Length: 131
Image 1 (tube, rainbow, N blue to C red):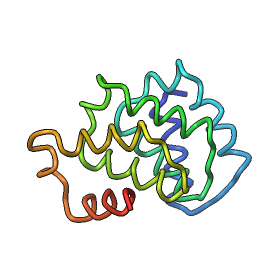
Image 2 (cartoon, rainbow, N blue to C red):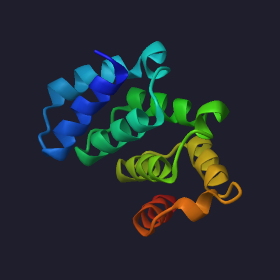
Image 3 (cartoon, rainbow, N blue to C red):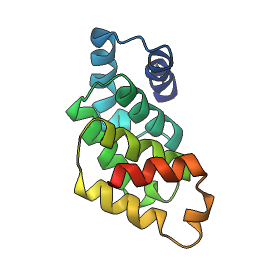
């Protein structure tokens, strides 16, 4: 399955609020693999973070892979406000702190006119995540 397929499966489970830890563990293991996570686009990355947080599954290797992917300068600049918001919200919801991720998100949010692209919900979620 492609990264989009796998992230969409996780997203669908979360939207249905169906917490199947065995399935999510298999997905997390696959998505945590550096070469696989390396092919994720911004939407796949944000959806995956959101899905695991929505289900309350704090898979440390997966979240670390998401943080590493997100903090890559070349990738970080491709993220839109909604992606930033979802990733920040996911880490905060799971009670997981990653200083490099927090700093990268803050830098991106304050980069030029980027912050102006946040809608009210994205702004509130991101601010809450920093609280």
